[in-house]
Length: 225
Image (cartoon, rainbow, N blue to C red; front, side, top):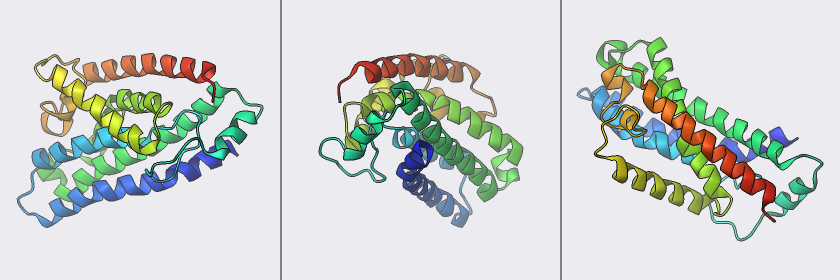
């Protein structure tokens, strides 16, 4: 029941994400002069937005849209009354959200390859899948940052807050050219351009995500709703 419930809350966000990604892909397909560098530069920001948008809302009921909801949804109290640990509720929602994000990343990466053509994009479809998986890992930090903010913010402000924190993080690290800089794969080290898997940035993302998971779970287990 919980799996189905969380899917109902998430499915329209997947549709919205795919539509948003489809716009630049469609524009590139109509533009003979489109390059992989220009296309991926615009889409890289959307990858971070996707991570923030598909992140679950902890154990609260999540609106299918991004509209502002006053207070807690009545379904949240019903969910909390079930004989299920809060950590389990968080885990189920997290798996559903990550699955949606993974689909969006893979569809977009493969779309770039198909729209531009393997010769122009200089990557095969198999390599595009690998890049999609790499960007998925790089986005884990942004995903769980959004999950943490969702404990205190509604869906709309969760997205705004996540993008604000992501923007501040980029500004603070913009002069750091270390391969461990989480933002490099979204800018100067775009895998579609460099053809290099950003292993170091992926390690950073996983480490940050692990810390955020621990903090989020701690708050969820102890907070009164």
